[in-house]
Amino acid sequence: MQKPAISVVTCTYNSEKYLKKCLKSIESQTFINIEHIINDSFSTDNTVKIINEYIQKNKNKYPIKFFQTKPKGIARALNDSWPKADGEIIHFLHSDDYYINKTSLERAHKIFVKNKDRMWFTANAIFEFNNKIYKFKIPAIMKHNFKQIITTANFLSHENTFIKTKLLKKYGGFDDSNNVTIEYRLWLRITEDYAPLIINDYFTVFIVHHGSNSTGSFFGFTKGLFEGMRTLNKEGIIPIVGIKPGKLLSNEFKNR
Image (cartoon, rainbow, N blue to C red):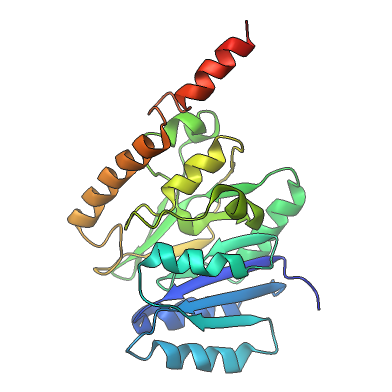
């Protein structure tokens, strides 16, 4: 059996409201050298029924791995899921995300093919709110001062970020001590060694709604800011400087 090029990971919990749109966007992709990993946290609504219907429809099109784990937060669900990925590239498509068009995965794969030395890329953010689409381009300065800027806040659009699966194994996955900025620690750790490729394009739409973690409320947004500062402190990273003090001293001695 051919090894999948891309592993798509989706975690669900009572996700029936947006899940069909998410799954439809996957099965509509032109690039089908993929696998889909779905982890459900024992939903009590129609989520599992929707997933089973999706599996039955697409089981002969690409591999679908479906399992369930206890509801212990999105970070834990993701950490229970990504080790099952066999693809070289991994993308986390939450149940309230959907691919912007049928070529999203095809375009993402081509970027890695053309840039074989790059380990990850991040692209522009795109949101759906009240059935309207809002686009936000990555500022040009991010291409030149990414390491410094990422230490000021978690600016990356996680739904428009694709990474090599082996980076998760190397840098430890998601931070399950956070509820909002679960991926920030991972981005910081990867950035110490690998700068992302900045892409001026859109791949995945995030639906802003009341139940969404980071944007569902002012409280969630504020909590995310505090979590970000706590993550920097725990990782020993100086904001703006963009490097750990230990590495800063190490580089200073090397230059003497």
